[in-house]
Amino acid sequence: RTVVLATRNEGKIVELRRILADADEKIELIGLERFPEIGEIAETGLTFAENALIKAHAVASASGLPAIADDSGLCVDALNGMPGVFSARWSGSHGDDAANLRLLLAQVSDVPDGRRGAHFACAAALALPGGDERVVEGTLAGTLIRSPRGSNGFGYDPIFVPDGEQRTTAELSPADKDAVSHRGRAFRALVPVLHELLAG
Ligand code: ITT
Image (cartoon, rainbow, N blue to C red):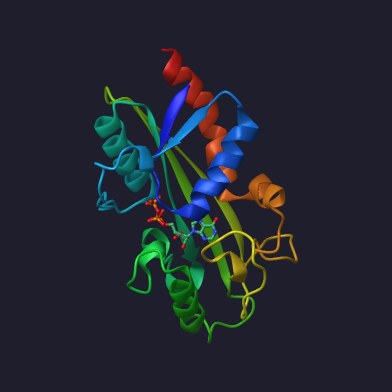
């Protein structure tokens, strides 16, 4: 089963290759570098699910192959759910994880302990060239700390401690992050859906 992975985010690519290889060793993932004609895809949706479907459909129709996409982000209670779908471009420069994290930390610097709840969310979408689609979601609840810790993962991981954990998601081993993460949950749920859709 050959499926195109419709993302250019290196952190996601690493995690998705790992999560999907663990869930089903027969899925062959090919990257967007195989389709240089596919340019930037405008993420105009208001929800993670909408954006994941936009990306999966764009790549499925351009490549002629089934495509899976991830749209994800961090939703901060004290910021009414922001940055949410704007997580990758929160500081204004898309994909600048360090700048995004710095800005977010500054914005919550006055938020007291006890009100620093947040959750990661991930929508995993599958689209077929003929137009069929599926989308499933996963979340991970936790708390924002005040100074970054850890060097695993990507994005906002150094400031996010999952509920019931002491370590940030950047201090967890890759396998420990995958076991609880929004992305692990969403993509493990997508695998049976993928089998069903590709079979039928
Ligand atoms: P593609 O659209 O090419 O997939 P992107 O980086 O633009 O890449 P998103 O719009 O879905 O993707 O933004 C995801 C952002 O959310 C990402 O840049 C991080 O800042 C944050 N994020 C998502 N999952 C995360 C995780 O597991 N750990 C830390 N930060 C995460």
